[in-house]
Length: 183
Image 1 (cartoon, rainbow, N blue to C red):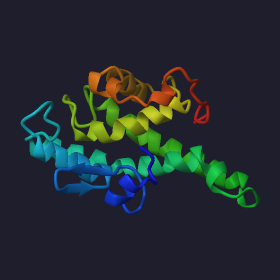
Image 2 (image 1 turned 120 degrees about the horizontal axis):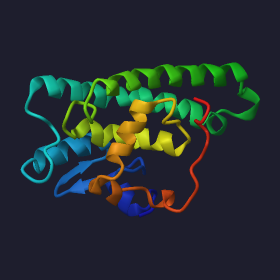
Image 3 (image 1 turned 60 degrees about the horizontal axis):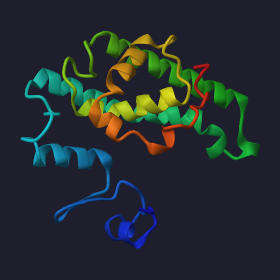
Image 4 (image 1 turned 45 degrees about the horizontal axis):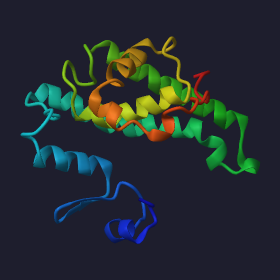
């Protein structure tokens, strides 16, 4: 489906994905769609929002922290694409790399304290929403040797049937990038 098609524009006037409709409900933000689906279909499949307030708090914290991680990743990976050539500065590139490195160290620390997943022993909505960012970073050359806990997390989840079923088709059979290899 083309994101600027009339079909998409009818449910998301921004012409962006996600453009999600479930019955009479329209949700155009991925977090909103995930919360809605988990609440609407909570008796089906894996329970993604745990009952324990302690685990819920951890899950919500990591879910919303991914915005910071994602932005710092974008600042490094897409700097040359987003910033016009005449406005680029080596100092900004270095600052962006240092900010991403500091953020990755936080996530490395978080994952060293868990058994498997971001909020503890069970796969939760935090993993649904954070894993794609982590996967994209490894696809972009992030080193599992430099970030072993992130690497372990990535490798332990990438073969889940639900993740394999939604793996981007453009990643299959194409080489990974090396943008983050020095981070």
